[in-house]
Length: 141
Image (cartoon, rainbow, N blue to C red; front, side, top):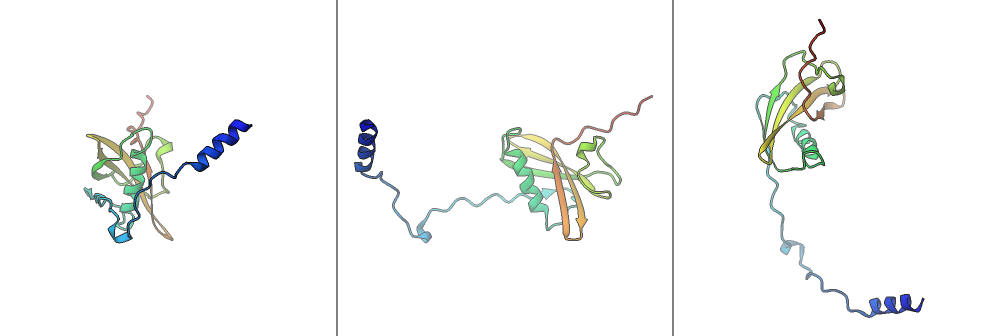
């Protein structure tokens, strides 16, 4: 018990660690501005939500699977009218949603993403899936 009290007293008696000098807000160092990405290709996304869709893609890329948030390019390719993923787990939007493949270049490799866009009463909506689903299943003979 006396050992704990002695250690606690010694911690209180020690001078506080040196801290960085306080700078007025105008003199504080600023971070480099984020790189503004543009989606190339004929996207069907509403311009109001393209930035939100890019942020969602960045959440995927910085996660445990892809482990790279350094996105350098995004190329959009709309899927043909009426296209839906063969895997029902990737049907991420309501009937009539528009599907796109976004090829995202990150850390020297290209990762394909599935993006789905549609309109709701409240405005444009989207969803993101990764990895891009495999082609449609072959019919049984």
